[in-house]
Each structure stands twice: as structure tokens, then as C-alpha cells.
Image (tube, protein in one colour):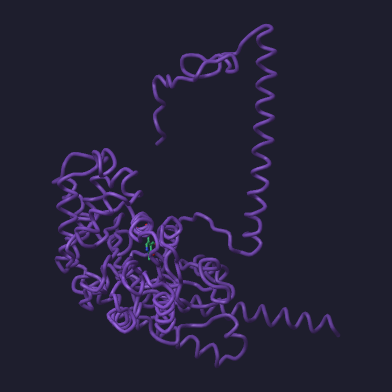
Length: 479
Ligand SMILES: Cc1ncc(COP(=O)(O)O)c(C=O)c1O
């Protein structure tokens, strides 16, 4: 079904001598006589100059895109075949297609106010009692004093990192931190934004020591340090060593002024860890050691948006200074209703069986199968190591990075056989760590794991045969 044409699109085309006359509906009215010649010339001139301008720009853009194409790093929008097995999305608990949650969502929509759009920025007309109540309920669920709903996790991180660190403060971040934190840091007034090696505590300690030693305002607590980590890293599926990080920040010999503030992004742990999916910070009991937590609703919660959990003062500061919150239309009522239904689903314990299947059956099940595959391929001899490297240790999350120098080709092969996995290439990951990312879900089955492993094995055999053949050809050519 198409969209209906507006009956009277009287959208004031500004009339000037340079503009051709228009009819009431905005369509061109063809002029006649001498007028027509001038009009045709003007129209042709305008078209030509427009084409010249756009072709120059488009040529530049095309050259840049071609570079990506030739290095197989071009990004493309794709859709997934309806019957394909999902080993890719962040719908960790398979709630996006859960009929029970769908039903609860519809009921929530029926119960709530008869609004669709929120009507504006949260600071103007976009706020509602519904949003405020939901925000308090979510904060209480995660055992936090206050929460601030945001349109997305991306907005939340940009808003937070761009305004919370004060002039002269320092941000230290894990080198694998999400792009949204990088964008926030770019806008921030922090004096320095320093990376530490991914998940390496010795590196974090060294950066902290340098900051304290080289800046007396940090040493004496006039300026602060913010440390940004994620609980689960989306490309490697590994967890931040929160125990050790918290212990480090409590260490008075390292930080005499106790002025390092931990910010934890729980985007990939929401719904998966802690009682009823409250997150890893709650599981470890570190609520009071973390200054701000981010939970996003677009992954395990099958909705959209995010919440920043913090103190009431930090919340009030963000309401006043976080520009992505101030200058944007707030979440619509249906979006909030979706979030509410998902949280109610988690809190009622209805996601527990899915969580158990995911973390207790599928994660160890895939790891065992990948190790088995590696062994089997190695026994067969040949270039397995060149084509596939599986994680040595079982991940503690549903995300598996299977390294391959041909991730896009392997992913396309799996997709052609009905299994959706994604090839991940630089700049998203480091050169030399190209991979397919396999993401498991509460609704996947052991049979689907077997199917995926069989497809990967078939691809390796096929590529190995191709490689051997092309080597043989080279040898023949040399003779
Ligand atoms: C670690 C992390 N933080 C933040 C975000 C952004 O969240 P959202 O998708 O809600 O914008 C993502 C999304 O991929 C993420 O992986």
C-alpha cells in the first residue's frame, strides 16, 4: 500500500523573478512566448550547475567508497531472510519475537495514555508521569538511587561524556570502548582522554600512576579522573575484570584523593547477568563503586532507548547540560510501553528459562563444538589455521569471535546456507583479528548449533581444496 497524496500540497514555493511560476499545487506551469525562452535557458543553466556540483562531490565520495570496496570493508545495509537462523543480532534472549512479551506490550499500550508521539524534548512537552514512574521503577530494579531515560545508548554516552568531566579532568578508557564514548569524548572539556590496553589492569594502573604523578590537581583531588569500561565487549565477548578495577580505584596509595569515578556501560550485560538480569554490577554488588551505569534497551530487552543510573545530583546535572537529551524529541509512549513490558517480563522471572538455555547450554555447547571442529580439521591436515581460529577458552558471554582472514566470504557462505553470522573487519576490529561474530540467543537450539558447525566445516573444506588447487596451478606453471 502506498502513501496517499496530500490533497492540496500548497507548500509555499517562494516566488521571485528567478523562480519559474508554479500552479497552486506546486507543479510547474509552462510559460509561453519570450518568457518561455528565458525560462528554458535558466532551467538548463541551473540543471547544468547542479550536475557539475554534484558530480564533483559524488566523484569524491565514490573514490572513497571504492577504496573500502577494494579492501572488502564496505558497509552495506542488508535485510535478513525471514527463515534464517539468527546467530547475529543482539536480541540475546530472543525476546523480540517472544509471543508472551508481545502480548504484554499490547496490553500495556491499551492501558496507557492514548498518545503516540511524546510531543517534544523532555524538558519541554515530552515528559510525562508515565516516563517518570518508569524511570524510578527501572532505577529501583537495578538498585540505583536515580535514573535518567535516554533515547538511545548512543545518545546517553555522547551526552554523559561530553558534559560530566569538567575542564581539566581526565578520561581514561578501555581501548575497545564503544564509538559513542569516543564521540562524547571528542566533545568533552576533559584535558586528556587516555586509552589503556583492552582489559589489561597493568596498563590501567600505569596510566593512572602517570596521571597522578604528573598533575598535582589530580593528586590533591581538585580535578577528577573518569574511567570508562564496558561489562561485556561486543566484538570479543569478554568481560571487564570489574573486581580488579574496583579494587584498584579503592587503593589509597594509588589514588590518595579517591577522585577516580568509574563509568560502566552494561549494554551487552543487561538482562543476562545478575538476579533477573539486573546486570553485572548488581551481580557483583558494586552498585556503590560505580558512579554511572548505562543500561540499553535495544539488545536483550528487545526495545529501544537506554537509562543512565546515577545519583540524583548527577541526574540533575545531565538534565541541565546533556545536549543529546535537551535538544531532541523524547521517546514516544509506545517506546516507553515496550521498555516497561520488557522490564516486567524480566522482573517476573519469565526470561529465566531462556537465560539458562543461553548461558548454561548453548554457550558451552558452541564452544565444545568449535573446539571439536578445530581438532577435526587439524587431523585432516592442511591449512586450517590459515582459515579459522576458535576461542581457546569458553566465553562468559553469548558472543564468540571466530577469527578468519576471510570473514566476509565465510559469513556470506553461512548466510547462503540459512545461518546469519556477520563478518567483522577493520576499522571495527584490529587488523589481523578479522572475524566472524557468532552471537547466541536464548531461543537458539542445539540442533541449530550443529547446523552452523556443519556449514563452517564445509566452507573450510571447500576453501582448503581451492587453495590447494591454486597452489598446484602455480607449481604447474613454474614447470
Ligand atoms: C557498548 C555499547 N554502548 C552503547 C551502545 C549504543 O546503544 P544504542 O544501540 O541503544 O544506541 C551500544 C550499541 O551497539 C553498545 O554496544
